Amino acid sequence: MNLFRRMLVEEYRLHSRLFGSTRFLAFPLFVAAIVGGGVFLLQATGTDLSAVVAGLHALVAFFGLQVGTLGLVGRDAMRDVLGDTTLLVFSARTLPLSWRRLLATFLLKDLVYYAVFFLTPLVVGFLPVALVGGFQPANVALLWVTLVATFALGAAASLALVGLGTRSKAALVAVVAVLAAVAVLRAGALVAATPYAVYANPSPTTALTAAVPIAVAAVLGPLLFDPATGSSRRRVRRDRYRTLRRVPGLDGLTVRPLLEVARSSGSVWKVAFSLGVLFAVTALVLDRVAAATGLEPAAGTAFGTLLGLGTFTTYNWVTQFDDPREYLRYPAGMPGVFGAKFRAHLVLAVPVGLAYLALAVVWYPVGDLLVGVVVFPLVAVYVYGLTAFLTGLSPNELLFDTVLFAGFGAGLAILAVPLLVAALAAGTAPVAADAAAVAVAAVFAVVGVVLARRAGPRWDRRLRDLD
Image 1 (cartoon, one colour):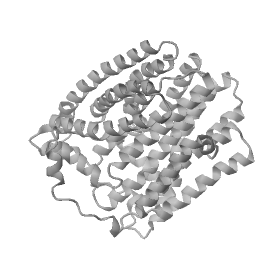
Image 2: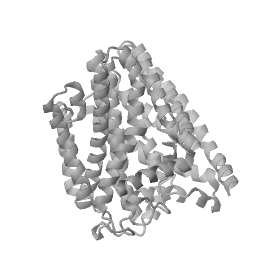
Image 3: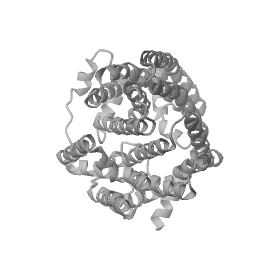
Image 4: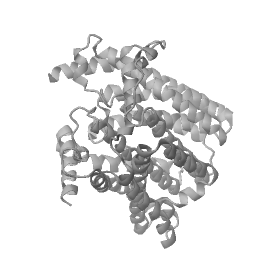
Protein backbone atom coordinates (compact mmCIF):
# COMPACT_ATOMS: atom_id res chain seq x y z
CA MET A 1 0.00 0.00 0.00
CA ASN A 2 2.88 2.33 0.74
CA LEU A 3 4.34 1.69 -2.73
CA PHE A 4 0.93 2.30 -4.32
CA ARG A 5 0.57 5.62 -2.48
CA ARG A 6 4.08 6.72 -3.44
CA MET A 7 3.43 5.91 -7.11
CA LEU A 8 0.30 8.05 -7.04
CA VAL A 9 2.26 10.92 -5.48
CA GLU A 10 5.03 10.46 -8.04
CA GLU A 11 2.55 10.61 -10.92
CA TYR A 12 0.97 13.79 -9.59
CA ARG A 13 4.32 15.48 -8.93
CA LEU A 14 5.62 14.53 -12.37
CA HIS A 15 2.77 16.20 -14.22
CA SER A 16 2.16 19.12 -11.87
CA ARG A 17 5.85 20.12 -12.06
CA LEU A 18 5.89 19.80 -15.83
CA PHE A 19 2.78 21.86 -16.49
CA GLY A 20 1.92 23.57 -13.21
CA SER A 21 -0.80 22.43 -10.81
CA THR A 22 -3.51 24.66 -12.28
CA ARG A 23 -3.05 23.50 -15.87
CA PHE A 24 -2.75 19.89 -14.78
CA LEU A 25 -5.81 19.91 -12.52
CA ALA A 26 -7.83 21.62 -15.25
CA PHE A 27 -7.32 18.59 -17.48
CA PRO A 28 -10.37 16.63 -16.17
CA LEU A 29 -12.58 19.70 -16.71
CA PHE A 30 -11.36 19.96 -20.28
CA VAL A 31 -12.03 16.26 -20.92
CA ALA A 32 -15.58 16.59 -19.57
CA ALA A 33 -16.21 19.69 -21.69
CA ILE A 34 -14.88 18.24 -24.93
CA VAL A 35 -16.73 14.93 -24.48
CA GLY A 36 -19.97 16.77 -23.66
CA GLY A 37 -19.62 18.94 -26.75
CA GLY A 38 -18.73 16.01 -28.94
CA VAL A 39 -21.66 13.88 -27.76
CA PHE A 40 -24.03 16.83 -28.23
CA LEU A 41 -22.86 17.34 -31.83
CA LEU A 42 -23.09 13.63 -32.60
CA GLN A 43 -26.64 13.48 -31.28
CA ALA A 44 -27.53 16.62 -33.24
CA THR A 45 -26.44 14.84 -36.43
CA GLY A 46 -28.71 11.90 -35.63
CA THR A 47 -26.13 9.51 -34.24
CA ASP A 48 -27.68 7.04 -31.84
CA LEU A 49 -26.34 7.26 -28.28
CA SER A 50 -25.81 3.50 -28.23
CA ALA A 51 -23.31 3.94 -31.08
CA VAL A 52 -21.61 6.71 -29.08
CA VAL A 53 -21.36 4.37 -26.09
CA ALA A 54 -19.80 1.65 -28.27
CA GLY A 55 -17.32 4.19 -29.62
CA LEU A 56 -16.38 5.30 -26.10
CA HIS A 57 -15.64 1.70 -25.12
CA ALA A 58 -13.52 1.23 -28.26
CA LEU A 59 -11.52 4.40 -27.61
CA VAL A 60 -10.95 3.54 -23.95
CA ALA A 61 -9.81 0.04 -24.93
CA PHE A 62 -7.30 1.58 -27.36
CA PHE A 63 -6.08 3.95 -24.65
CA GLY A 64 -5.66 1.07 -22.19
CA LEU A 65 -3.70 -0.96 -24.73
CA GLN A 66 -1.38 2.00 -25.29
CA VAL A 67 -0.80 2.42 -21.54
CA GLY A 68 0.02 -1.29 -21.25
CA THR A 69 2.93 -0.93 -23.65
CA LEU A 70 4.76 0.51 -20.65
CA GLY A 71 6.43 -2.88 -20.54
CA LEU A 72 8.42 -2.01 -23.67
CA VAL A 73 9.56 1.27 -22.14
CA GLY A 74 10.42 -0.59 -18.95
CA ARG A 75 12.83 -2.90 -20.73
CA ASP A 76 14.57 0.05 -22.35
CA ALA A 77 14.75 1.81 -18.99
CA MET A 78 16.55 -1.21 -17.53
CA ARG A 79 19.10 -0.92 -20.30
CA ASP A 80 19.79 2.71 -19.41
CA VAL A 81 18.72 4.10 -22.77
CA LEU A 82 16.12 6.52 -21.46
CA GLY A 83 18.49 9.04 -19.95
CA ASP A 84 17.40 10.32 -16.54
CA THR A 85 14.03 8.56 -16.49
CA THR A 86 13.97 6.94 -13.05
CA LEU A 87 10.36 6.30 -12.10
CA LEU A 88 9.56 3.94 -9.24
CA VAL A 89 8.32 1.29 -11.65
CA PHE A 90 11.86 1.08 -13.07
CA SER A 91 13.59 0.77 -9.69
CA ALA A 92 13.89 -3.00 -9.32
CA ARG A 93 17.68 -2.78 -9.61
CA THR A 94 18.13 -0.09 -6.99
CA LEU A 95 15.42 -0.94 -4.45
CA PRO A 96 14.64 -4.27 -2.75
CA LEU A 97 11.48 -4.69 -4.82
CA SER A 98 10.64 -7.30 -7.42
CA TRP A 99 9.59 -6.46 -10.96
CA ARG A 100 6.35 -8.39 -10.47
CA ARG A 101 5.36 -6.37 -7.43
CA LEU A 102 6.31 -3.11 -9.13
CA LEU A 103 4.35 -3.91 -12.28
CA ALA A 104 1.27 -5.17 -10.43
CA THR A 105 1.25 -2.04 -8.26
CA PHE A 106 1.83 0.15 -11.29
CA LEU A 107 -1.14 -1.41 -13.10
CA LEU A 108 -3.37 -0.76 -10.08
CA LYS A 109 -2.05 2.80 -9.77
CA ASP A 110 -2.70 3.50 -13.45
CA LEU A 111 -6.22 2.12 -13.15
CA VAL A 112 -7.03 4.44 -10.23
CA TYR A 113 -5.19 7.40 -11.73
CA TYR A 114 -6.80 7.27 -15.17
CA ALA A 115 -10.21 6.43 -13.68
CA VAL A 116 -10.08 9.70 -11.73
CA PHE A 117 -8.38 12.01 -14.23
CA PHE A 118 -9.72 10.65 -17.51
CA LEU A 119 -12.57 8.13 -17.31
CA THR A 120 -14.71 9.88 -14.68
CA PRO A 121 -14.59 13.25 -16.54
CA LEU A 122 -15.43 11.36 -19.71
CA VAL A 123 -18.63 9.99 -18.15
CA VAL A 124 -19.44 13.36 -16.52
CA GLY A 125 -19.23 14.97 -19.97
CA PHE A 126 -21.56 12.32 -21.35
CA LEU A 127 -24.04 12.69 -18.47
CA PRO A 128 -26.15 15.76 -19.51
CA VAL A 129 -26.83 14.56 -23.05
CA ALA A 130 -27.41 11.02 -21.83
CA LEU A 131 -30.04 12.06 -19.26
CA VAL A 132 -31.83 14.24 -21.82
CA GLY A 133 -31.70 11.33 -24.24
CA GLY A 134 -33.54 9.05 -21.83
CA PHE A 135 -30.65 7.35 -20.06
CA GLN A 136 -31.31 6.43 -16.45
CA PRO A 137 -28.72 7.36 -13.79
CA ALA A 138 -28.15 3.64 -13.25
CA ASN A 139 -27.17 3.29 -16.93
CA VAL A 140 -24.63 6.11 -16.57
CA ALA A 141 -23.19 4.49 -13.43
CA LEU A 142 -22.94 1.18 -15.30
CA LEU A 143 -21.18 2.99 -18.15
CA TRP A 144 -18.53 4.27 -15.73
CA VAL A 145 -17.96 0.77 -14.36
CA THR A 146 -17.66 -0.84 -17.79
CA LEU A 147 -15.35 1.90 -19.09
CA VAL A 148 -13.02 1.46 -16.12
CA ALA A 149 -13.11 -2.31 -16.68
CA THR A 150 -12.42 -1.79 -20.40
CA PHE A 151 -9.35 0.31 -19.58
CA ALA A 152 -8.18 -2.40 -17.17
CA LEU A 153 -8.66 -5.07 -19.83
CA GLY A 154 -6.71 -3.08 -22.43
CA ALA A 155 -3.80 -2.24 -20.12
CA ALA A 156 -3.56 -5.74 -18.63
CA ALA A 157 -3.87 -7.48 -22.02
CA SER A 158 -1.21 -5.26 -23.57
CA LEU A 159 1.21 -5.87 -20.71
CA ALA A 160 0.51 -9.61 -20.82
CA LEU A 161 1.31 -9.72 -24.56
CA VAL A 162 4.52 -7.73 -24.00
CA GLY A 163 5.40 -10.09 -21.15
CA LEU A 164 4.76 -13.13 -23.33
CA GLY A 165 6.98 -11.59 -26.01
CA THR A 166 9.85 -11.31 -23.53
CA ARG A 167 9.62 -15.09 -22.99
CA SER A 168 8.91 -16.40 -26.46
CA LYS A 169 8.43 -14.56 -29.73
CA ALA A 170 6.87 -17.68 -31.26
CA ALA A 171 4.30 -17.93 -28.47
CA LEU A 172 3.46 -14.25 -28.88
CA VAL A 173 2.93 -14.66 -32.63
CA ALA A 174 0.75 -17.72 -32.00
CA VAL A 175 -1.46 -15.94 -29.44
CA VAL A 176 -1.84 -12.84 -31.62
CA ALA A 177 -2.70 -15.07 -34.59
CA VAL A 178 -5.38 -16.87 -32.56
CA LEU A 179 -6.87 -13.58 -31.35
CA ALA A 180 -6.86 -12.20 -34.91
CA ALA A 181 -8.54 -15.36 -36.20
CA VAL A 182 -11.24 -15.12 -33.53
CA ALA A 183 -11.73 -11.43 -34.35
CA VAL A 184 -12.19 -12.27 -38.03
CA LEU A 185 -14.29 -15.41 -37.72
CA ARG A 186 -16.23 -14.78 -34.51
CA ALA A 187 -16.02 -11.10 -33.66
CA GLY A 188 -19.22 -11.38 -31.64
CA ALA A 189 -17.67 -13.96 -29.34
CA LEU A 190 -14.70 -11.66 -28.74
CA VAL A 191 -16.94 -8.69 -27.90
CA ALA A 192 -19.01 -10.92 -25.59
CA ALA A 193 -15.92 -11.41 -23.42
CA THR A 194 -15.43 -7.66 -22.90
CA PRO A 195 -16.96 -5.19 -20.42
CA TYR A 196 -18.96 -3.68 -23.29
CA ALA A 197 -21.09 -6.85 -23.28
CA VAL A 198 -21.90 -6.14 -19.62
CA TYR A 199 -23.14 -2.68 -20.53
CA ALA A 200 -25.16 -3.98 -23.49
CA ASN A 201 -26.64 -6.88 -21.55
CA PRO A 202 -26.04 -6.58 -17.81
CA SER A 203 -26.30 -9.90 -16.01
CA PRO A 204 -24.20 -12.02 -13.64
CA THR A 205 -23.22 -14.23 -16.59
CA THR A 206 -21.91 -11.42 -18.79
CA ALA A 207 -20.15 -9.85 -15.78
CA LEU A 208 -18.39 -13.12 -14.96
CA THR A 209 -17.50 -13.69 -18.62
CA ALA A 210 -15.95 -10.21 -18.85
CA ALA A 211 -14.14 -10.47 -15.51
CA VAL A 212 -12.22 -13.64 -16.37
CA PRO A 213 -10.06 -12.17 -19.21
CA ILE A 214 -9.24 -9.11 -17.08
CA ALA A 215 -8.18 -11.23 -14.12
CA VAL A 216 -6.15 -13.63 -16.26
CA ALA A 217 -4.33 -10.83 -18.09
CA ALA A 218 -3.69 -8.87 -14.89
CA VAL A 219 -2.03 -11.92 -13.32
CA LEU A 220 -0.12 -13.08 -16.41
CA GLY A 221 1.35 -9.67 -17.26
CA PRO A 222 3.55 -9.23 -14.16
CA LEU A 223 4.27 -12.99 -14.01
CA LEU A 224 5.46 -13.30 -17.60
CA PHE A 225 7.30 -10.00 -17.90
CA ASP A 226 11.06 -10.43 -18.03
CA PRO A 227 12.64 -6.96 -18.01
CA ALA A 228 16.14 -7.72 -19.33
CA THR A 229 17.16 -11.34 -19.71
CA GLY A 230 20.41 -12.36 -21.26
CA SER A 231 18.53 -13.97 -24.12
CA SER A 232 17.24 -10.55 -25.12
CA ARG A 233 20.76 -9.45 -26.02
CA ARG A 234 21.57 -9.79 -29.64
CA ARG A 235 24.35 -8.89 -31.99
CA VAL A 236 23.69 -6.13 -34.43
CA ARG A 237 25.15 -6.18 -37.89
CA ARG A 238 27.97 -3.68 -38.02
CA ASP A 239 26.93 -2.38 -41.43
CA ARG A 240 23.24 -1.79 -40.62
CA TYR A 241 23.82 1.95 -40.49
CA ARG A 242 25.62 1.92 -43.82
CA THR A 243 22.95 -0.31 -45.33
CA LEU A 244 20.23 2.15 -44.41
CA ARG A 245 22.35 5.09 -45.54
CA ARG A 246 22.40 3.61 -49.03
CA VAL A 247 18.62 3.98 -49.28
CA PRO A 248 17.83 7.14 -51.26
CA GLY A 249 16.56 9.93 -49.04
CA LEU A 250 17.92 8.48 -45.78
CA ASP A 251 20.75 10.59 -44.36
CA GLY A 252 22.50 10.00 -41.05
CA LEU A 253 20.00 12.00 -39.01
CA THR A 254 17.14 9.98 -40.49
CA VAL A 255 18.83 6.63 -39.93
CA ARG A 256 19.40 7.39 -36.24
CA PRO A 257 15.72 7.31 -35.12
CA LEU A 258 15.09 4.31 -37.38
CA LEU A 259 17.89 2.38 -35.68
CA GLU A 260 16.75 3.55 -32.23
CA VAL A 261 13.26 2.19 -32.85
CA ALA A 262 14.60 -1.03 -34.39
CA ARG A 263 16.99 -1.67 -31.45
CA SER A 264 14.51 -0.77 -28.70
CA SER A 265 12.17 -3.29 -27.08
CA GLY A 266 9.41 -4.29 -29.46
CA SER A 267 11.48 -3.01 -32.40
CA VAL A 268 9.44 -1.77 -35.36
CA TRP A 269 6.69 -4.23 -34.40
CA LYS A 270 5.38 -1.78 -31.81
CA VAL A 271 4.51 0.57 -34.68
CA ALA A 272 2.52 -2.26 -36.24
CA PHE A 273 0.94 -3.05 -32.87
CA SER A 274 -0.17 0.55 -32.24
CA LEU A 275 -1.72 0.97 -35.68
CA GLY A 276 -3.10 -2.57 -35.54
CA VAL A 277 -5.04 -1.77 -32.38
CA LEU A 278 -6.43 1.34 -34.04
CA PHE A 279 -7.31 -0.72 -37.13
CA ALA A 280 -9.34 -3.12 -34.96
CA VAL A 281 -11.02 -0.23 -33.13
CA THR A 282 -11.95 1.39 -36.45
CA ALA A 283 -13.42 -1.87 -37.74
CA LEU A 284 -15.47 -2.22 -34.55
CA VAL A 285 -16.72 1.38 -34.72
CA LEU A 286 -17.70 0.97 -38.38
CA ASP A 287 -19.62 -2.18 -37.49
CA ARG A 288 -21.40 -0.52 -34.55
CA VAL A 289 -22.25 2.64 -36.54
CA ALA A 290 -23.70 0.54 -39.36
CA ALA A 291 -25.72 -1.53 -36.90
CA ALA A 292 -27.02 1.46 -34.93
CA THR A 293 -27.77 3.92 -37.72
CA GLY A 294 -28.27 1.80 -40.81
CA LEU A 295 -25.67 3.94 -42.61
CA GLU A 296 -22.75 2.37 -44.47
CA PRO A 297 -19.76 4.65 -43.79
CA ALA A 298 -17.04 4.80 -46.44
CA ALA A 299 -14.49 2.31 -45.14
CA GLY A 300 -11.58 3.81 -47.06
CA THR A 301 -12.08 7.31 -45.71
CA ALA A 302 -12.72 6.03 -42.18
CA PHE A 303 -9.67 3.77 -42.09
CA GLY A 304 -7.45 6.35 -43.79
CA THR A 305 -8.51 9.05 -41.34
CA LEU A 306 -8.26 7.08 -38.09
CA LEU A 307 -5.06 5.25 -39.03
CA GLY A 308 -3.55 8.58 -40.04
CA LEU A 309 -4.53 10.15 -36.72
CA GLY A 310 -3.01 7.10 -34.99
CA THR A 311 0.42 7.87 -36.43
CA PHE A 312 0.79 10.19 -33.45
CA THR A 313 2.04 7.06 -31.65
CA THR A 314 4.70 6.60 -34.34
CA TYR A 315 5.98 10.10 -33.65
CA ASN A 316 6.25 9.09 -29.99
CA TRP A 317 8.45 6.15 -30.91
CA VAL A 318 10.82 8.11 -33.20
CA THR A 319 11.38 10.73 -30.47
CA GLN A 320 11.35 8.38 -27.47
CA PHE A 321 15.10 8.49 -26.87
CA ASP A 322 15.72 12.15 -27.63
CA ASP A 323 17.24 14.74 -25.38
CA PRO A 324 16.20 17.89 -27.27
CA ARG A 325 19.11 20.01 -26.02
CA GLU A 326 21.57 17.42 -27.32
CA TYR A 327 20.77 18.44 -30.89
CA LEU A 328 21.80 22.06 -30.24
CA ARG A 329 25.39 20.84 -30.43
CA TYR A 330 24.97 19.46 -33.95
CA PRO A 331 25.91 21.52 -37.01
CA ALA A 332 22.78 20.29 -38.81
CA GLY A 333 20.59 22.52 -36.63
CA MET A 334 17.07 21.84 -35.40
CA PRO A 335 15.47 22.28 -38.87
CA GLY A 336 17.63 19.40 -40.09
CA VAL A 337 16.69 17.29 -37.07
CA PHE A 338 12.96 17.80 -37.58
CA GLY A 339 13.34 17.10 -41.28
CA ALA A 340 14.98 13.79 -40.41
CA LYS A 341 12.23 12.95 -37.89
CA PHE A 342 9.68 13.70 -40.62
CA ARG A 343 11.28 11.19 -42.98
CA ALA A 344 11.66 8.55 -40.25
CA HIS A 345 8.03 9.04 -39.24
CA LEU A 346 6.83 8.44 -42.80
CA VAL A 347 9.20 5.50 -43.40
CA LEU A 348 7.79 3.70 -40.36
CA ALA A 349 4.12 4.69 -40.46
CA VAL A 350 3.12 4.74 -44.13
CA PRO A 351 4.02 1.13 -45.10
CA VAL A 352 2.32 -0.22 -41.96
CA GLY A 353 -0.84 1.81 -42.52
CA LEU A 354 -1.04 0.74 -46.15
CA ALA A 355 -0.59 -2.88 -45.10
CA TYR A 356 -3.62 -2.59 -42.81
CA LEU A 357 -5.63 -1.03 -45.62
CA ALA A 358 -4.65 -4.02 -47.75
CA LEU A 359 -5.81 -6.33 -44.94
CA ALA A 360 -9.17 -4.56 -44.88
CA VAL A 361 -9.81 -5.99 -48.36
CA VAL A 362 -10.89 -9.17 -46.54
CA TRP A 363 -14.03 -7.34 -45.29
CA TYR A 364 -14.54 -4.36 -47.61
CA PRO A 365 -14.58 -3.83 -51.41
CA VAL A 366 -11.27 -2.80 -52.93
CA GLY A 367 -12.84 0.21 -54.60
CA ASP A 368 -14.03 1.59 -51.25
CA LEU A 369 -10.56 1.33 -49.75
CA LEU A 370 -8.65 3.08 -52.55
CA VAL A 371 -9.67 6.45 -51.13
CA GLY A 372 -8.01 5.43 -47.88
CA VAL A 373 -4.74 4.75 -49.71
CA VAL A 374 -4.71 8.45 -50.68
CA VAL A 375 -6.16 9.88 -47.45
CA PHE A 376 -3.98 7.97 -44.98
CA PRO A 377 -0.51 9.32 -45.91
CA LEU A 378 -1.90 12.85 -46.27
CA VAL A 379 -3.36 12.69 -42.77
CA ALA A 380 -0.09 11.23 -41.45
CA VAL A 381 1.78 14.24 -42.86
CA TYR A 382 -0.58 16.65 -41.11
CA VAL A 383 -0.36 14.76 -37.82
CA TYR A 384 3.43 14.90 -37.96
CA GLY A 385 3.47 18.64 -38.67
CA LEU A 386 0.95 19.46 -35.94
CA THR A 387 2.64 17.25 -33.32
CA ALA A 388 6.16 18.45 -34.08
CA PHE A 389 5.11 22.10 -34.09
CA LEU A 390 3.23 21.89 -30.77
CA THR A 391 5.34 19.44 -28.77
CA GLY A 392 8.79 19.52 -30.32
CA LEU A 393 10.73 16.38 -29.45
CA SER A 394 8.72 15.69 -26.24
CA PRO A 395 5.27 14.58 -27.45
CA ASN A 396 4.52 12.55 -24.32
CA GLU A 397 4.35 15.73 -22.29
CA LEU A 398 1.18 16.93 -23.98
CA LEU A 399 -1.13 14.31 -22.52
CA PHE A 400 -1.81 16.10 -19.24
CA ASP A 401 -0.97 19.68 -20.24
CA THR A 402 -4.49 21.05 -20.59
CA VAL A 403 -3.59 23.98 -22.86
CA LEU A 404 -1.35 21.91 -25.10
CA PHE A 405 -3.81 19.03 -25.21
CA ALA A 406 -6.65 21.40 -26.08
CA GLY A 407 -4.63 22.87 -28.96
CA PHE A 408 -3.64 19.43 -30.19
CA GLY A 409 -7.20 18.12 -29.91
CA ALA A 410 -8.60 21.12 -31.75
CA GLY A 411 -5.97 20.71 -34.45
CA LEU A 412 -6.98 17.08 -34.99
CA ALA A 413 -10.70 17.80 -34.78
CA ILE A 414 -10.73 20.39 -37.58
CA LEU A 415 -9.33 17.68 -39.84
CA ALA A 416 -11.17 14.65 -38.47
CA VAL A 417 -14.70 16.08 -38.38
CA PRO A 418 -15.03 16.90 -42.11
CA LEU A 419 -13.37 13.62 -43.07
CA LEU A 420 -15.67 11.55 -40.87
CA VAL A 421 -18.70 13.47 -42.12
CA ALA A 422 -17.55 12.65 -45.66
CA ALA A 423 -17.30 8.99 -44.63
CA LEU A 424 -20.88 9.03 -43.31
CA ALA A 425 -22.18 10.90 -46.37
CA ALA A 426 -20.67 8.42 -48.82
CA GLY A 427 -23.84 6.34 -48.81
CA THR A 428 -25.87 9.12 -50.43
CA ALA A 429 -23.23 10.84 -52.60
CA PRO A 430 -20.22 8.54 -52.92
CA VAL A 431 -18.29 10.38 -55.63
CA ALA A 432 -18.69 13.81 -54.05
CA ALA A 433 -17.90 12.46 -50.58
CA ASP A 434 -14.72 10.71 -51.76
CA ALA A 435 -13.58 13.80 -53.71
CA ALA A 436 -14.24 16.00 -50.68
CA ALA A 437 -12.29 13.64 -48.41
CA VAL A 438 -9.25 13.65 -50.70
CA ALA A 439 -9.41 17.44 -51.12
CA VAL A 440 -9.65 18.06 -47.37
CA ALA A 441 -6.80 15.66 -46.63
CA ALA A 442 -4.62 17.28 -49.32
CA VAL A 443 -5.20 20.78 -47.97
CA PHE A 444 -4.33 19.70 -44.43
CA ALA A 445 -1.25 17.84 -45.69
CA VAL A 446 0.02 21.15 -47.08
CA VAL A 447 -0.68 22.72 -43.68
CA GLY A 448 1.26 19.85 -42.10
CA VAL A 449 4.28 20.47 -44.31
CA VAL A 450 4.26 24.16 -43.39
CA LEU A 451 4.02 23.33 -39.68
CA ALA A 452 6.79 20.75 -40.00
CA ARG A 453 9.12 23.31 -41.61
CA ARG A 454 8.39 25.84 -38.87
CA ALA A 455 8.85 23.32 -36.05
CA GLY A 456 12.66 23.35 -36.31
CA PRO A 457 13.23 27.12 -36.03
CA ARG A 458 10.50 27.39 -33.35
CA TRP A 459 12.01 24.78 -31.06
CA ASP A 460 15.55 25.93 -31.75
CA ARG A 461 14.63 29.37 -30.37
CA ARG A 462 12.75 27.90 -27.41
CA LEU A 463 15.52 25.53 -26.38
CA ARG A 464 18.21 28.21 -26.66
CA ASP A 465 16.09 30.60 -24.60
CA LEU A 466 15.89 27.97 -21.86
CA ASP A 467 19.69 27.58 -21.72
